Length: 364
Ligand code: KQY
Image 1: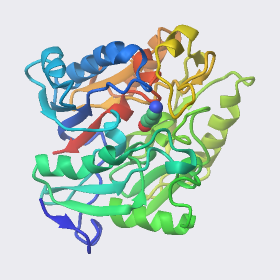
Image 2 (image 1 turned 45 degrees about the vertical axis):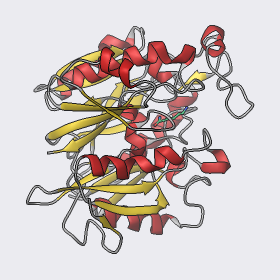
Image 3 (image 1 turned 90 degrees about the vertical axis):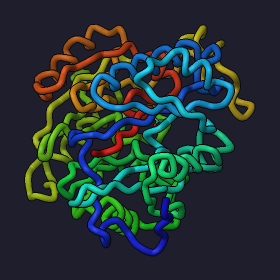
Image 4 (image 1 turned 90 degrees about the horizontal axis):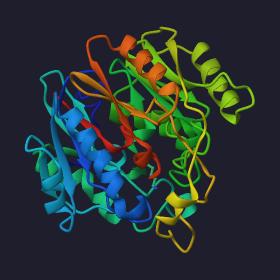
């Protein structure tokens, strides 16, 4: 593994492919952190295993597990899934596994962004985050990929979506948050995205999903289904605080164009009814920095947009909500070549994210 410090992917002819382009595989991390995953993570691990099984139907899945969870991960996961021992602070592969870029010859390299637990000491979600921050480089070593060093810039993989044709979507609430790169102006942040993802247009949605503790990661509200088309999390309930948030994002997309000069075709993906955490679930969570990790009744950032595009499947969350079926039908119609697999994901949601947040694709 070569550490590249003096060049950028764009200078070297590398770009971040869209998630809908072919994958070599997928990386996940086994959950165990007791202030993220209720009751010691038993239910979360079962849900993660279902996600790994679904993705492994069409691509090679590698699960990183701590030394103490290694045997359990190996026992719970199918033989087709590779398990490697690797330490981490939590289990959000999307956010701190490498972002992979590819050149026209098919060479794959990683990007090692800085990670500070979604806001560092300002409004981050836990401390320390040192092991998470080492993961991108360790994974590039494991896969024998050269890696671009960009640790002076804080970015999580869940805060970007690209169409592979020069467009990146982000949210202002996240990328301009005070805990990430407070000394950088919007134009400077945009330049880093241009240089490292090799995009020419950055679309800035105003916000993400209400109460999303990542400061509104884009991967929970909006995702490309192909170049020129995206899904947007939506509610018709004007009394829901999310209504104005989703509407503002829709208006932004209606008034801007992508790198190819297209107006993006937006498909509304309905949200489930508000999902709140129960007292019993809160009782199963350890405290975080002397504070309860969650408060009973707290609204969780549930959204069907948080799905993973595998080579032959869409792996999407379900919440036991009447809208589950309709959301599944919407995604099935948008991805007719891939079978949609819906996994009951409340136990992932309680941790603060969903299926997209716990997976990271390696392009082929
Ligand atoms: O990408 C994400 N949604 C991760 C959220 C982390 C929450 C930690 N409890």
